[in-house]
Image (cartoon, rainbow, N blue to C red; front, side):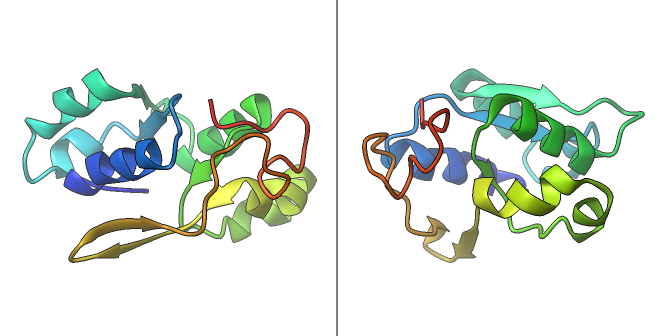
Length: 130
């Protein structure tokens, strides 16, 4: 859910918290919405970058990715529509979602401890930050 330079700042914030395996997803329109299109290739060099399939809603693709890979999702979206349609999303989307705040100083992630041995992060055995 981060756009333009915030995507780069968001990945930097995750790296500062100890996350190493970072995947950024967007729909195909992102390249047309960037204020500085040169930032997209830079981002693609730093993280795994995926474009959601054009025939599939981006939220659905993101949620299916999280469901399959059991990874954290950095988003401020509540996914209300998808919670009504999918019991797994209703039960687990908020658990896997990591909210953020954009300020003039940059991207701020809500309290994150990327240490996989920390019980507050490792609530499920397959959840990890790398």
